[in-house]
Length: 277
Image (cartoon, rainbow, N blue to C red; front, side, top):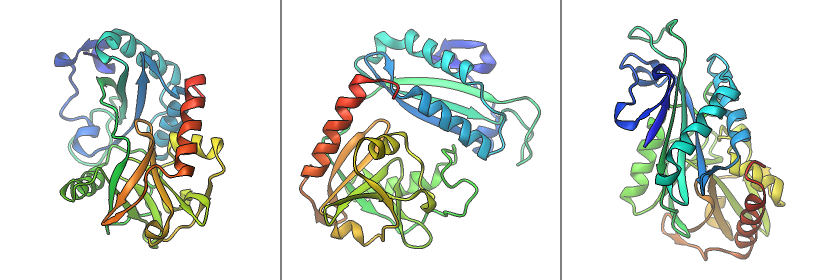
């Protein structure tokens, strides 16, 4: 594989890709990122991901990334690795505050940009999930930001794996359903398709936004208890697309239900027609 590294001047072999140990992204997780799906050598929804990268950088007070530079770096990286990616790949854009002295103060070296790719195995047809008690802080300055500070997600996902599940869902500080460690969540309650509102602190997912546009789903304040009262549940992400949920904690669900199936089929149809919706 070849990765694109700003301080190396562009594409380098993956074994030669280097970032300083003093980079703020490494020392204090001072950075933002995006994960994109690559289908048959084509990146999906690049424009939306670059827009969110810019919003996340602004929220963290980082210099605005140049979308033309990032977009060009993405294209170079995908093109260089296309034969190795196969039909499905994962691409990650990482953008950090750059090299600084040890501590929380930022330096003057300028941002670091890294584009990395790998082949990807499709997700299972459905997912088992667990709920965890650790809340998202909807009042945090990082609420809704795709920050590289992911330790909470790592711990929650480890809890899910301990219980034979592939994802963990968490509340916000008010006990409302918020999101997964790397996914947004939708549920059908009394025949209505709902997803947590952004004021819970959940990430404004790209796939979440497309499902809202391409279905009759609505945002709502949803108690955690609604998960176990729901007729159907599914999770979304840029690599999962629309993934039905067949178990939450110890409760089984029929998956996919009729609503989930319809949403998934519509997503597949529209995303195949337009790779940058």
